[in-house]
Image (cartoon, rainbow, N blue to C red; front, side, top):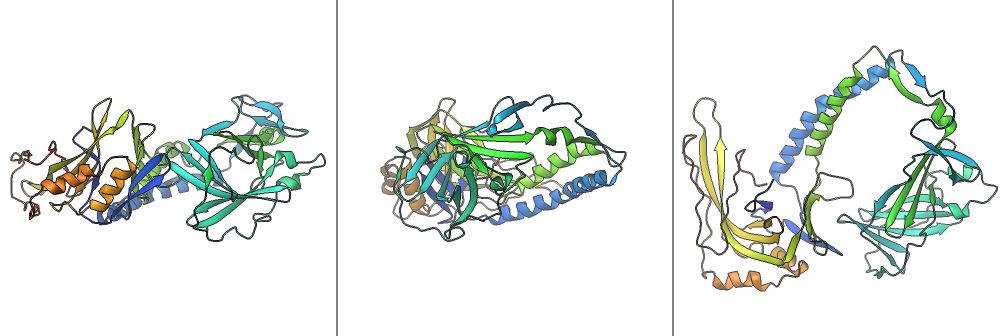
Length: 430
């Protein structure tokens, strides 16, 4: 848990190292590059992930080498936990989940006049282009400045004499010329007044899979994306449920796989970011990108209460010594606290560490205040009140102390409430 005095994001003393991105109803504050300590931490986590990952692979490989006896579903129909459905494909029965298709809600969906669509979901923005090619529909997601395409078949275009070949095409077979090309940087006029051009129509994924045995479909239903998976009865009855082996202990996978995933998550090289949902009144901290990541949400945030306070933070550092008492010392970090009120107490989303140079983060502070609808006078007032030749506060030099002698954080006469952030593991900010 974070107390009110601990910032969610500590901006280091580096100009132009951070950026503010407007994503419609969401404002993203992110780092532009990984710091040296972060790069070292990623390498360390990857090294720790090697052993459990290799061990998991060995266990799985050993299991397949054993004389395994598959346990088959010899019952009739779909079996327990499934129901039959004839709605997926005309004239064919598939086994589906009794709870229905999976539903993924969108925050917004907008359509442009040049066949582009923009969706937002949990702070992420997805843009893609679409084009109908013969009976098929091609979506081109915008990734790294290029169109990455995939093909679907609208259910309405499936005629009475369909064959499985209609549902299983070669990858890229119907791709238009713009697939794989660079995205035009021109401004597009998006509107939320129009529905998705294929709203309410099931779309078959036709580039991957085996439609005789497995079928995947999706449908846009206003601000919901529905995904339906189906498997044929023959596939269900002849499938393998599990293997009985006398080789490697498969139960160890329950230990090694989570450990591997934990270390790999720690080695996530994606940049950290704060997502300010101004309209929804919440702040989310997670990694930048479309793929899932660990995230923390602070709800009931009052953005109209935003204030920028001048603060000096006292940071404690510890250096352990096996041959004697460890060293402890403190350093001072003057800067700005961005403070927001919330139902369960205030939070400090960002602390701008400037070392006494009030203009070090001026551009990024003003950009963030603007996107949060906060007047820039809350920053300008500090410049007017500061002395003309205010010296930068240097970091305190390490001082030799025993483990019982700790310098307590001192309050400063600068504006706003002073806070302290304790770092016991080293000299790095969060």
